[in-house]
Amino acid sequence: MESNLTREEAWNLLKTYNQEEFHLRHAVTVETVMRWYAEELGYGEEKEYWGIVGLLHDIDFEQFPGEHCKKAPELLEKGGASKELIHSVCSHGYGVCSDVEPVHEMEKVLFAADELTGLIWAAALMRPSKSVSDMEVSSVKKKFKDKRFAAGCSREIIRTGAEQLGWELNDLFDKTLRAMQAGEKEIEEKMAEISAS
Image 1 (tube, rainbow, N blue to C red):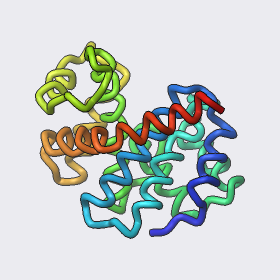
Image 2: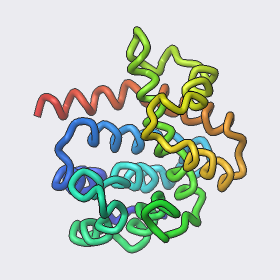
Image 3: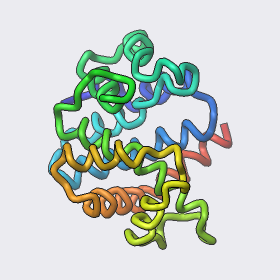
Image 4: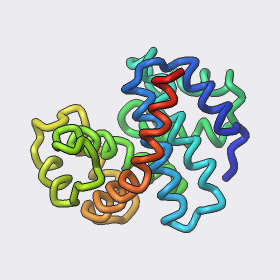
């Protein structure tokens, strides 16, 4: 799997439809997590593609929340994205706002990790350090069980995602937390660049 868009083209395309820092941070976080997963799962030569799919996965959400994953194909096509890239992006909404099924392992990882990164980030903001660097899997589990915490993060989607991958929930928590810890510095650097521009 190879992206026909460069990272810079993907970023410019994302910024055409997304200006809010919250959405840009989520996009960069999921991009970084997806690149880590590509390496971790033996798809190192595809990590650029995994990252770009992560970066663009919510391209339509800021401006068209009611048409999430339905507006994306049009926006991505306009930006020159391949059919494969469009399929990968839309598959993360499967059963929620899209009927595009995740087939490739990468698409299943995106489906599973997307909501979870939001939950982990919300948990990090509650910590004195405001960081994932000192977080443990037990904290993620505790926050996951507390349905009032980050109530917008669907536990059902996270569970379904783990099942699709054939992973225990704990494995998904552990890997996604490690991915965010490994990429935290890079995410903060990218966010600093956005603030400065």
